[in-house]
Length: 141
Image 1 (cartoon, rainbow, N blue to C red):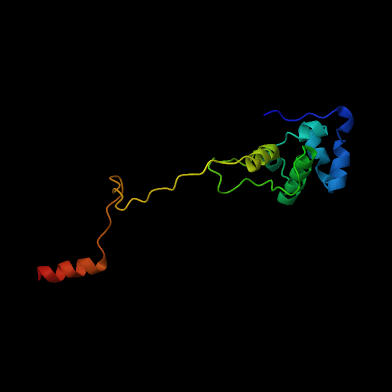
Image 2 (cartoon, rainbow, N blue to C red; image 1 turned 90 degrees about the horizontal axis):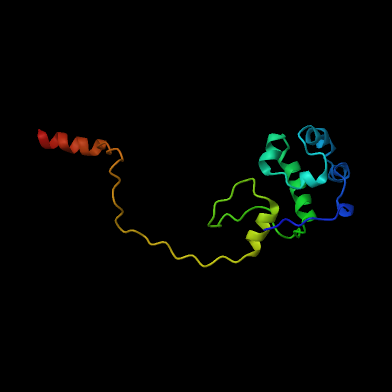
């Protein structure tokens, strides 16, 4: 899947975006770590934001701005579905989350219940309860 590219005239300035979001305190941290313009910030991951010590709410603001820039409507959640059959990492981009939400998944077959599951041969043996120890003691006497 190709990430859409935008002409250079429509690319906003990084400092303008941070000012609009109220995140100007992160401008220096982003610049020190190689994120000098908006085009590089668009590809930032959740792990990168965590490493740069962004607060959770500030990460969500920036992720929403990136998603809006990429054309993802604000009505769609950026969080991955919890019932999604594939495991997702925290570093998935908003575009990947958007495509996952818009594609339909095939119906899953119902999981079969095992009436008598096999015992695990590696599991430790259960200790006898106080009741059974008492009964065995009475039987011996």
